[in-house]
Amino acid sequence: MPVPLYQAKAEFFRMLGHPVRIRVLELLQDGPKAVRDLLAEIEVEPSNLSAQLAVLRRSGIVTATREGSTVVYALAGADVADLMKAARRILTELLAGQNELLARLREDSA
Amino acid sequence: MPVPLYQAKAEFFRMLGHPVRIRVLELLQDGPKAVRDLLAEIEVEPSNLSAQLAVLRRSGIVTATREGSTVVYALAGADVADLMKAARRILTELLAGQNELLARLREDSA
DNA sequence: TGTCGACTTGAAGAATTCTTCAATTCGACA
DNA sequence: TGTCGAATTGAAGAATTCTTCAAGTCGACA
Image (cartoon, rainbow over all chains, first blue to last red; front, top):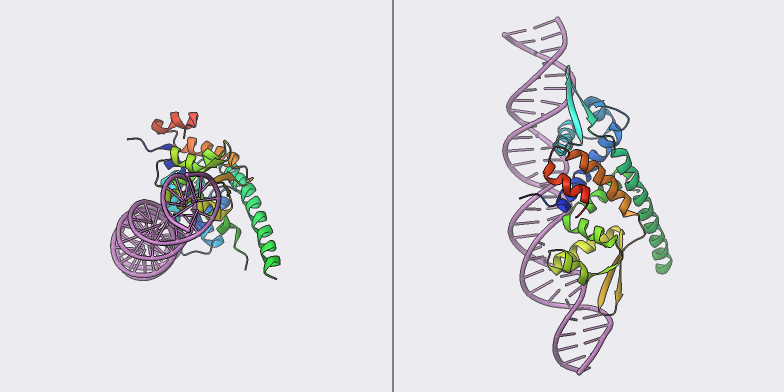
């Protein structure tokens, strides 16, 4: 019983659907980073960051390697940047549209 | 109070994170479609489809227009295809070990 | 007007995901 | 060995999202 493709896609996007996970992926685009460094840049408790890292790890989009007493995370593939870029393009359009709508709404109520 | 960008991104991806919503977006890439036609292609109850369409509408990624007694949905000008392509590329990498899905990914049948 | 078909909405419970706390593992080092 | 710092895990409750059903709106048409 194979998982339908559209369900795999949905799971993939849901995996991306968390602020902390987004920030981790963006930080890792500059290269591998230790958990300690991620913690310094993201406002979140260690246990919570770990939980989100676990989600990313389970999906396979990042890898973790122990180096001495710290753990270093890295992107498992190179294409995440493209995805983020495409998302940003759409998001920019959507937000611009919303601002437009908001402006008109304000006019109407005045 | 502006919404942080990484949170807007997370919300955007979460909006995509549902099998029915993914299928709707893919179907709409071929052009506008009436709800009736979406219902014929997606196995889901009308009220459920409506709920998922409402999520897409609220996010602004689709628009709905009434035409006679039916309602027609369309992509709201955003280039969703690029996003899907980037996502498919990453998914292909992630699933490279699981040949079960790989074949269909390349065909992009769903 | 009254009814039918197409679609949406509200509400309630089920299911999933998030956050937090406490406990745990693993390596480093005295 | 004993302890410290770094990171993870398990568990419980909170919060969010999904699904379903019943009721509702809106246009078409007799």
